[in-house]
Length: 329
Ligand code: AQP
Image (cartoon, rainbow, N blue to C red; front, top):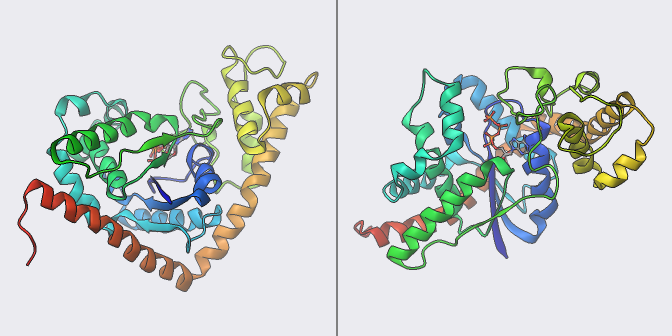
C-alpha cells in the first residue's frame, strides 16, 4: 500500500476550513493508503501556548480525528511529540535547507506579522519540520489545503536534494487536494482564509459550535450586492458559501445555483447553516463520547506512538548512516 501522511496543529478550535480542506479528505481517501495522522504539537509551540490548554486541545484533536471517521486501529493516529525522530530528522534537514528558500515562505511572513513580539527561529524553520514529518514515513501523498502547497513544495525540494547527494533515501511526496473545499474563507471577510486563530469568532465555524451558533453565524455571513445565488468571483461571499455547501453535500455548483434559483440570500444562508449543522452533529456527539473513554483513547495513544516510532526510526537510522554518523554498537 502507498503511504499517506497528514497532520494538524492543536492551536485552537478546528474550523470547518480545516475539516473540509483536510480532515474530510483523510476520511474519504484514507482506506486506499497506509495512513499516518499526526497531532503536530511540535509545530504548535512556534506560537506561545498555555501548557494546560495545549495538552487539552491536543487530546481533543486526536479524539476528533477518530470522531470524524478515522479508524484508530487501521490508521496510525499519534502525537508528533511522542516520536522523537521528527525533531532529529528536522535538525539534519535544516542543514540541507537554504535560508533563501525559507525566506520565501508566505506563511512565515503572515505569522511573523501577527506575532511581531515572538518571531522565533522555530517559526522560521517550521517548513523543515514539516518536511521531516512527511519524509520520515516515506510518504507518497499528503492531503492538505491549498495554503500548505508552498510547504509541500519545499518538502519535495529538500527530499530531492538529499536524494541527489546520498541516493534514493526518501520517497518524494505528492500533494492531494479535494475538488472543493481547498480554501474556505472567513464568513466575515471572504477575502481572508478561515482560520482557527482568527480573533473574530463570527468569521469561523468551529467544529465544536452549537447548532444555534452555527445558524447565527451563517445568517450574519457577509454576502454581496444583488440577490441571486450565483457562483462568481465577483461574489466572494456567496461563492464561499456555495463552496462550503458543495464540499459537504457533494453537489456541483450548477446544481446549487438551480436549487436556489429565485430564492434569496436569506434562504440560501439558512440552508447552508442547516447542512453544516447536520454534518457536525454526529462528529460532536462521537467526540464527546470518546473523550469520556479514557482507557480507550490512552490505548490508541500508546499503540500508535509505538507504531509511528517503528516506521520513523527506520528512516532516521538510514539517514544518520548516509550523512556519516557513527554506527550504534
Ligand atoms: N480555510 C481553510 N480551507 C481549507 N483548508 C484549510 N486548512 C486550514 N485552513 C483551511 C487546512 O487544514 C489543515 C490544518 O493545518 P494546521 O493545523 O497546520 O494549520 P493552518 O494551515 O495554519 O490552519 P489554520 O486554521 O489557519 O490555523 P492557524 O490559525 O493556527 O494558523 C491544513 O491541511 C490546511 O491546509
